[in-house]
Image (cartoon, rainbow, N blue to C red; front, side):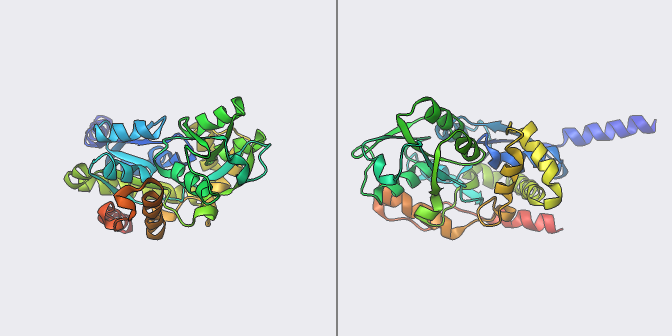
Length: 321
């Protein structure tokens, strides 16, 4: 009888879990979400979180606008593009790292100046890390479509493959673990993107504003689980278990997994502690979009137009309780 009662209570608890669909990129930035699922942090918040991977920025933006999923964990500039360019009412609710992007070129390229007249590849040409690449080359006096050709080639894994298969693709932004793969394959690393353009909010959590407002409690619980997943990943005592998740769930090659965890755990350039929001980095993101794309007539708006951190702050209070 007691066993049947326990099973019944378990079934009732499981059925009471609120479903949340999340989409992210298939890179190592997804590790805190994977950890939050596998370690039960979301379940403890009463959520059943399904994680889906996107092949491109455009796929993610279209899917979020269509309601195919509720939360995006992705390059934050995509949220800005959805709102400022496509007219969707999107809100960024938590921060993240600076994208951990590095500029890779073919081994025969000795300097940025040698990219003039060449082809460089990006994901979506009008968002996020493509804008960083445009800014870096603009500082060298080169304009996209005039002094070099810009080609959309999909997510980072696809761009690594493209550069290795087609040596005419001379440069691209890459983040871990693909940076490690690129180096191992002989591509040349010219440095961190933020060393070229300054502080930058690379990744964040965002949702449609009307969904967030109508499901505030769910969103707060999601962020609480995500923050706990981030804390777990970065804890030194979890290094071995986190490395195993990189291999098992995110398909990082076993020889690269320990080094990948070290990159993520780097307090200077890795995952943001507690998914903190970098306001200076976000202001720079807006300034970069205004300068490179001419959005808002070339003048960046106040960040409050696209950000609401009340859900994040409530999530921190939940964890503290």
